[in-house]
View 1 (cartoon, helix red, strand yellow):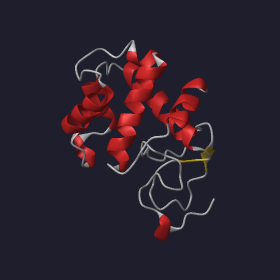
View 2 (tube, helix red, strand yellow; view 1 turned 180 degrees about the horizontal axis):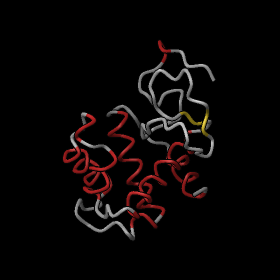
View 3 (spheres, rainbow, N blue to C red; view 1 turned 30 degrees about the vertical axis):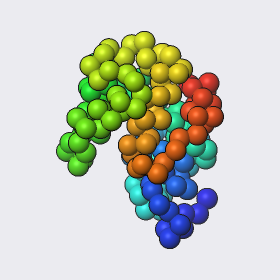
View 4 (cartoon, rainbow, N blue to C red; view 1 turned 120 degrees about the vertical axis):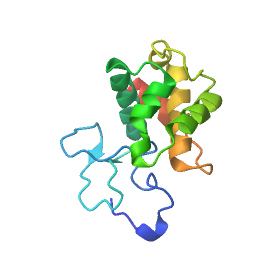
Amino acid sequence: MAITPGLIKTASDGINNPMNIRAIRNNSWLGKINTAGNPFKFEQFTFMWQGYRAGMKILKSLYAEGHHTLQDIISAYAPAGDGNNPIQYAKTVSESSGIPIDTNLAISLNDQDKMGMIVSSMAMVEQGAHFVPNMDDVNTAWLNL
């Protein structure tokens, strides 16, 4: 798949990565496309649902590493050192998903609807207000975890 810079509005356009997951050379995500030549330094996937799936797997991994609340996970996922505002990011995701910022996410990350709300809300933060997540892609990601 060729990327035409003039047609790209966000890092997700054309690379099926709604959560802006950074490219990691030794990672073998399902549906990962070789990122050589990708001008954004983000992972590239064959299908959008695979980008959501990778995001879900990252959230579950962060939880397993001890990041148990939305605030904790987002602070690790989108740290201030990368130019993010993790406090505002977490507040936005909390408001959009309906999941309190300081609640333990053990149940939410194992519930299809709640996980879907979290990753779709994160994708909207990552991609901007114009981005509308396709819930069919989010649900397909869940079914392929």
